[in-house]
Length: 323
Image 1 (cartoon, one colour):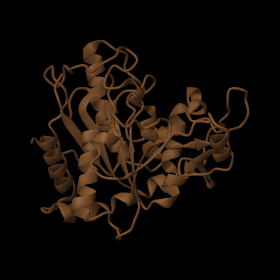
Image 2 (cartoon, one colour):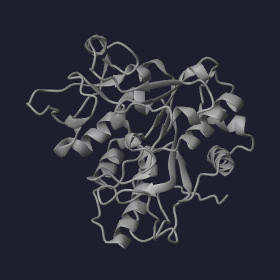
Image 3 (cartoon, helix red, strand yellow):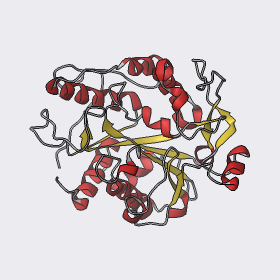
Image 4 (cartoon, helix red, strand yellow):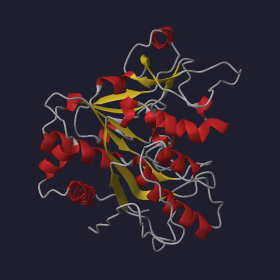
């Protein structure tokens, strides 16, 4: 298994940020991205920690990549680490796998378990940044219900209602039902519910694809997201088919060794879905749905374009840098 070279990763991120922003200086590139940034602003970072409880056997957003982003925010932009919030509300954020790899004293916002009376009160009173904000209801087109058939309301969490900026850090990975669990689907670890279930159980099944789009239409998510930095270092094309990190045939029987950067969640998900479906086709796996991406485009979230055989996108401006 190849190890992550942190110096090379930091260089990839730096050059990617500068190229995306069309700036020669890294600070100016970040200020271009955080276009209305003022000292003291709070920023949220949303990784994909879906399989963090499996240790290093499965792929998560690399803590090394997160640390590179945090390092640039602190040392280049000049942000106070206490103004940075790393969150995934479906998971506990472990010290050994994640926190020990982050070099700065940032805030961690994680799943609340109702294992104690105190936690139960926190949930019922919507207390803390991991709780839903009842003033920030997410408007859903589908009728969302729980397993008993009772209606479920969806909320933006308080961690997002207090921040001014969001950096979305998803994975290059398929979902078991759709072609990729990228920038759009990553916010399933954001949304909170009035039934206090820590997991988005009610948003699966027939409501899945529209729910993904509706969450991303929420103003606190749509308007505050300043950049998407997707981890494609290893990538996952066979979620639901097997465990462990697998080499890709379309990347010369190696790993993608890439990061993807965009402001457009639909475009970046379209590119990642294209690669995933190309690899799944090579491996003889079922091709998964991309319908939610077209729905996202029709709802004004970005540009959808899926390519079957190559990566020469016609509608998405796609530039490749080799470091």
